Amino acid sequence: MGEHEQVRPLALVGDRQSSDEGASLHQKKRGKKCCAFTVAIFVILVIAIVVVRFTVFRVKDPIIKMNDVTVTRLELTNGTIPKPGVNISLIADVSVKNPNLASFKYRTTTTTLYYHGQVVGEARNGPGHARARKTMRMNVTVDIILDRIMSNPSLNADFISGLLSMNAYTQVPGRMKIVIVKRNIVVKMNCSMALNITNQQVQTQECKQKVDY
Image (cartoon, rainbow, N blue to C red; front, side, top):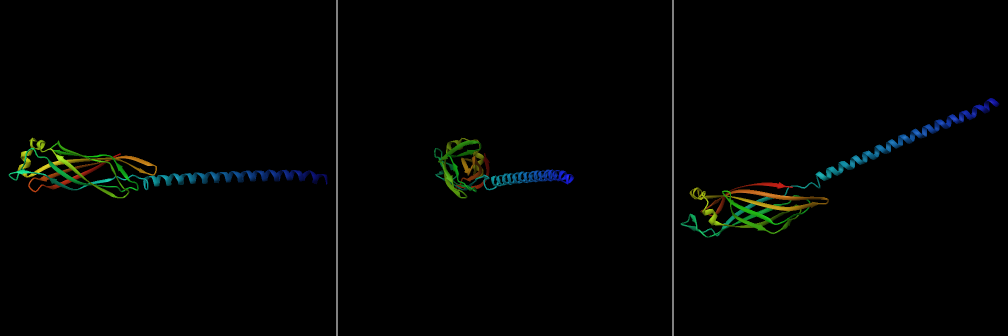
């Protein structure tokens, strides 16, 4: 009897040690699973934020376009030579397309007209905004200083060809905000055109756009 009573406590102690070790191991495994789950959720959130940032919240370039150009008040002498002392008005139909989910608010726009590198006219339009995924149109009227054209050494060659070669440079500075994303944007357009002296129409036109952030 004495021997059996001495063995029983030893067996109980061994069972308790094994049980404690098993519980500790189980807790460690559970902690590792929780840690791995947390890391996985964090990675998924980061990926989701990056995807949304570069898709839904990505700021797309506004598109500026010169739809039409007309010339008024052009008075000719003998049907070919512009009358000295008279200014010519050039009216440009300009549109700004906003492909984003937020409106594009722009400040004062400027349009400068060049004749063979010399400034011969400038116009300014007031601020406004292009609504989300909409196209805004505006008429830009530039008064051309004819005396500057008449004094330009390239005028004789243009009269012979019947075309006045000009460049129009338009700049639209503004700002766009998509939820938490704010961007300052400057939309620029440079157009090369040839004005037919006889019918007072733009015969050829080529425009290039650039967007600065």
